[in-house]
Image 1 (tube, helix red, strand yellow):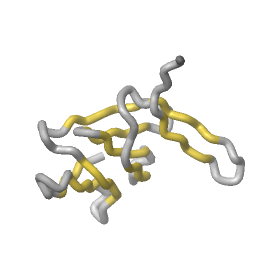
Image 2 (cartoon, one colour):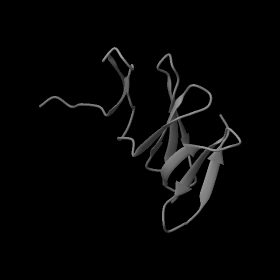
Image 3 (tube, rainbow, N blue to C red):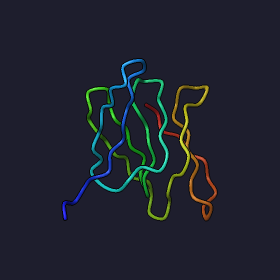
Image 4 (cartoon, rainbow, N blue to C red):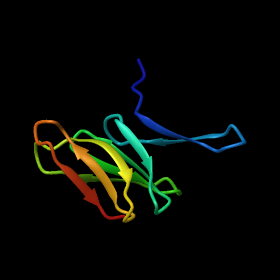
Length: 94
């Protein structure tokens, strides 16, 4: 059985073309377009981003912290919620 890696797909409006970006680890839980032109996403214990050229970067959070939702804030930072146990809100500056 062939092992598959998780991907995030980007649909080009009007064309129907989908570009797939392979993630190095587990599947993303939530994704959001950033003000910097990157795609931002959450993983277990990490925040990730994909540049328009397809480079994937992951940023680790402290042990026990798992981000859930992520969105662009009015200050152009990426804001995210952290799991219910820690009940925190964090931000990462693009």
